[in-house]
Image 1 (cartoon, rainbow, N blue to C red):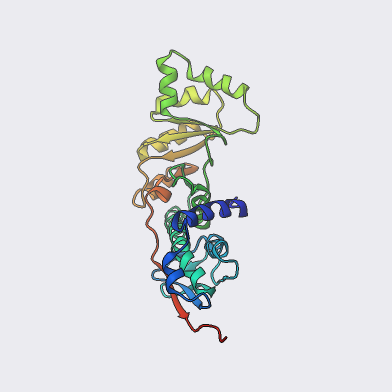
Image 2: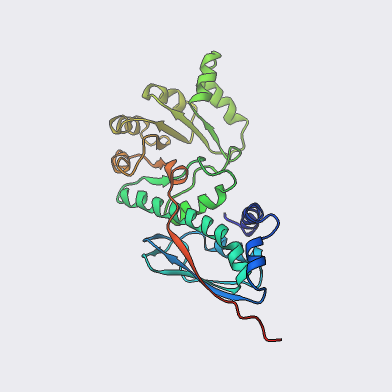
Length: 289
């Protein structure tokens, strides 16, 4: 899903933002002939994500710079591990350094946090999924990082699937429109391949949604006891998703209720960037005339 075209677009925009008219420090301070070698070093243990993005930051800045990835995406690593090695023009490496680090630190942070949630739900049927609470412009990268951490992706955009949430249902109810009838009418106008999900925040809303034959019912902000009751009531007639109030401290109890999916906004909207460093050495010896 994370295509070369997407990587190029995102990284190019980030590079332009960071150096719209070039890197005046490196261009005026570092000799054009200077070469450098740099290592991407982990300061903490986590899960790697973003190798192709890291490489693209340097390649799009200076195609002569080479990047050797020493750890694969989705692989765990320990503090002190060398994750990648960068060689080539010192100016090119210095100009791309911050963009490359920003993106790989964020992606690896998401992968590491996702892996923690996945580990907490081991042995249950629940899969951990992300949400649309992503950084504008970085959704494709952040979604890839979730997959690298062992999680799954929710719908990518508003165009991919129907997801009727509480505000949609509130508008229908306020206008005297039957939720079941509205959903049946919607299904009749959709391609047969389009998934339909509906969010409910009370157990007494489930029957009207089930009557429309939807594919997934999201139980929003239900307690574990309410989730168990909801799962039992739905009884396999729909995929059951739990959302709201999910943290590393609560996710195990939620998973043990029998839900199929647990969506976690924190994977992308509250993640901490990992502490990764680019340790560089520069040979400023100019070429012999």
